[in-house]
Figure 1 (cartoon, helix red, strand yellow):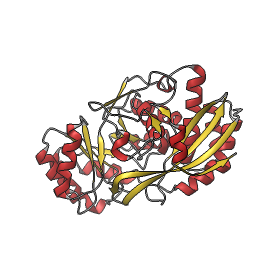
Figure 2 (spheres, rainbow, N blue to C red):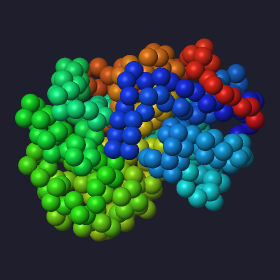
Figure 3 (cartoon, rainbow, N blue to C red):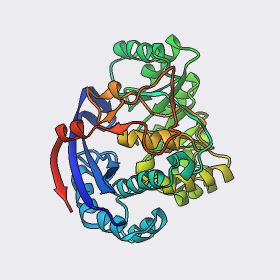
Figure 4 (tube, helix red, strand yellow):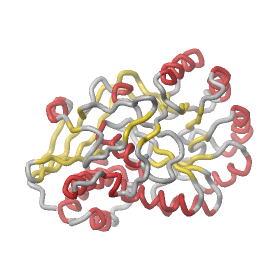
Length: 363
């Protein structure tokens, strides 16, 4: 692509409150925004790893290196999204970094062709149904937090859990909200030695338990799936459509959490949707506490045909004091409309983007 200007920004967004999972708490989001200018208009992609390699092997710093050295060249040299992925395929892993180029090129193609991005990826649903993810907290506070989001219209709640912060935790919420759709997310906190513990969760009628075992483990999830009644959802183990095929072959999961960034972008997301359809597996869309740019891909992915559960999509104000899109993303009555026009959910606020930038490199 013959862009007039290309840059990579490191931005920092302060969180309204710490977000805690089984691998720790984060107080701010350090994100990378890949931007390119063509015919006077800016196009964007985002990558949203953590600063430490806790969710996966990628970090803000490794992603910056991969984008600088490889992703930008692939974007410049490619004439299409498909060619971009061919060029970047020789780089092993680093899918969050690769997703920044994929998102930018989908943004560019959408505007150039005058089509919504959901149409480019074969989306069929007009709205993203929204749930909320609540970080680990005390049994005393969790009910109050869940009630707050239920009152705002969120249709599903995901509880982060870990050994010692699980059985009573889930019980407390279920007893207070007997009809609410609840899922639990373990972020790989358990092993097969915890089967008896995980069986105790079956009684609380969860829609799923997400990634209970190791982040690179598909095989042992197949074993666990035979031992517990709660449906298993795979998240960190799924990096491509081929991983979904492997999981389906051994019945390792009934549900796939699709995070577009984790699978290198919307191009691969569409392939995963196809595999899920062929294997009668359901999907839902997860999140990485992204800015409005990153969340736009999640909203668009929610239009895919096999998405069957409310997504981890939240109003910008749930996480941040200020987002970098205007208008900020807003969940209304538990839903967000999939954009019908070219581009993202909102327009990038260049002034706010500059304000939140801590470093910018031009290429």
